[in-house]
Image (cartoon, rainbow over the protein chains, first blue to last red):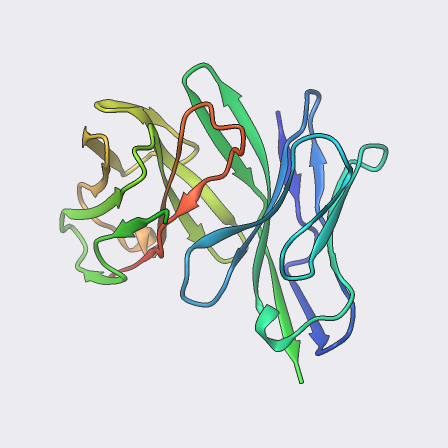
Length: 115
Length: 114
């Protein structure tokens, strides 16, 4: 079955430092991978996704993730974080069948950025 | 602009009460989902619907039911609320067959059962 694992429940980091949030997937079929972000008191919103093509995908606010098939990973990185990046980040993979589609989420990583 | 709305941001109910959580999307999406979010457990799928009057159980359907009478509205029902149903509930929708595969989420309803 397709699933994702986020090993870190919380990642504290200082402002302007680099950060990596880890995500590993398991799947025996084509893999679609996503990172969603949840800012405090809000719903989730899509940060970036890998469907096919270039293995490096980027978001509009400086995050990037690389699909690594040999390591079955899709880690999220940012070279310099801001206070405003404080949020919970969810890795997800896609499961589909006739008539429906659904996401399978990891347990989330809380990014805490301090001054 | 895409919009998914949920009827309440915060809700407090007593044990044994019947609770309705409403979700409305304005994007004409076929698929709608209800998740619950708990610390350390991420998002877990309760129920989803891929068309009007159609529903499928997700990973944790026990204690919940759903209703989808109109395409834009998907309701989650707690027949007899219990304290272990205290959680954040998130609704999402997506269009069937979309190549983006993106789900659009509402802001969530934080339910407390006392």
